[in-house]
Length: 245
Image 1 (spheres, helix red, strand yellow):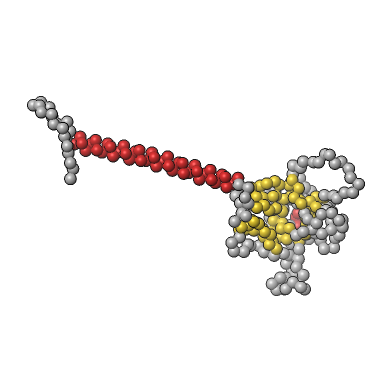
Image 2 (image 1 turned 90 degrees about the horizontal axis):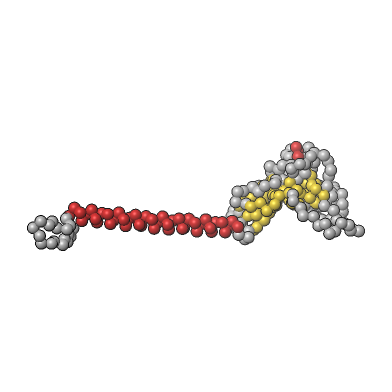
């Protein structure tokens, strides 16, 4: 029931100061104003929440918590949520040396040279790396070309390279997959196994001239101590780089 209270001034020529119609108008105007203020408050609250979420997202992206991995054979990272730490060229000890380092290195494209040391009686040497894919049924067009690489940062807590897999196990995210590669068996120098991207490319500015250096070769399983099946010496080994939050 609508209660209407009016102040009546006794006068023969004066009407009551409020009527049902103007009371309802004022009441409606009040409701409209309240609704407008509530909408403004809600908009400010939503904008503040969105701004806070964006700040949190930015802090997470810039957080130093995470893990890195090297993508061999490419100069970029495979996912938009990865951050490129740097890109460059694969290198390592010459294939014919019995000493030196035992792993491939991802050398940055913008090195800072140590100009203090210009000579030493005994040295270790760093060579660029080339694909050794001549006659292979994959990546043969890259034979003797230099190998690019990219160091990538992911917000995951850990990464792993799994040999002989193209997919990750449950609970892990695939960063990229490709071909397991290392130094050739018959050469003096050995290298740690690395995972070369399935869509590998030549390093910028590289040529097909055979200058050797550190060499990337496909890896084939040997059906003696390895069980065949499930392995087969007819197929080179794959690899997958996986991450986990």
